[in-house]
Image 1 (cartoon, rainbow, N blue to C red):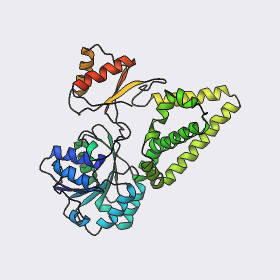
Image 2 (cartoon, rainbow, N blue to C red):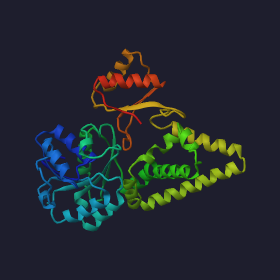
Image 3 (cartoon, rainbow, N blue to C red):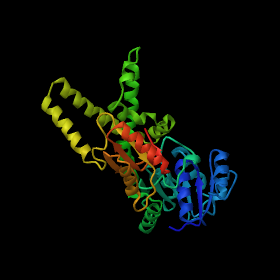
Image 4 (tube, rainbow, N blue to C red):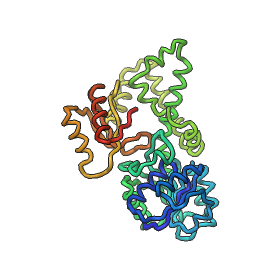
Length: 365
């Protein structure tokens, strides 16, 4: 897809990162934007990212080739309704929301199926706002594309090429498959993490014994409970039915496990745990997590030939061993694209200091 004039409604971490990458790819591209805070627009203008230096009414987007909806899902739906009678017939609207069913159903209701392609860049961090946006944020991250039933195949392929130009990995799914799949691998784990943390807080003693000794496995499985509560409140509302379905299935499986323990069924327990281990070990970053303490950090890395080799060479020159290394494709809750695991804390500390002096950005948990 060739874009001459782009519109961004919302210009935070994700929208800002997409805009910065597109501007790098094509410095002559015209980008206009509006946002919830005028300071966001002022900053983006002073950085030379956008054409306007003040907030814009939606009517200003009528000449855009493509409009990115980068606000929370419910607000994106409201903007979609307002844009229906503003955009030209050949304008594409896309979004970056983490749930797709609600907005696709509204697209159908509004008769905008020929104008809409859903999108979900699976990247991000606990940081927010245009200040945290980076042109490399999407590199090697999955970017799920959810076309409508009326999207021409040629447009799907062109949008796929556009995603590749951002450095991301395109994955085309229908919107219902997207919501069930992300519900299973992202939304349900967050519900489990939040629940487990609340359980420990509820049953801990006055000396906070459990909080004091919490480490390793507990911190790994509950790290995502530090994500934005407001964001997860919105996700629960927008992906309600798939999430309830998955929670019911999880509760049923947990009851099954409880039964094995209650009956002291050692063989069933062994099969249960072995099956989980085998499947987990088959995943891409196999064995990258330690079952106890994990000395790891993530590195921002520009997607260019020799990038990983350069990091490895720098560490090897300083006699620092790497226990495991991997590329993080689902970066929705991780900050760096290169995942490095070290054998001990001293190696981790030295590696972080050395790479920092070489101007690499390091993210520690």
